[in-house]
Length: 160
Image (cartoon, rainbow, N blue to C red; front, side, top):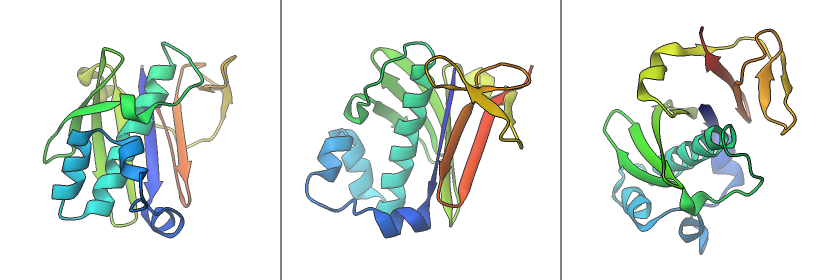
């Protein structure tokens, strides 16, 4: 299972006020809020953690589809200096890798850490959706993950 997310940092800065009352408590666990408070760039940390949570949600939908979104239940257990993460949702563990650039943050999350070597970035937007509205590649009919925010769009799947 694969999930991805992108955050256009310029758009997030313009459209979102993560410092407003209650925002952090609604989305992040106490451990995650501690990571934000200790980060040299708190805004970047907020959007990295958000990107990880969004990616987990997308991956989880592939094997237990449900329409609810519950960011506080998605728990980031470990985040290292290389922006690799271990996350848990409803007893299932996920592994994430996040890339941070001056303009964007991108995260990919997988069930199996060894599958990172199989990641494939699709250059085409030729995809359709399955019965649950989840994206699949038109050609291979395999599950993919699509994310777009502002100027950034990423479509990822697995190579054979």
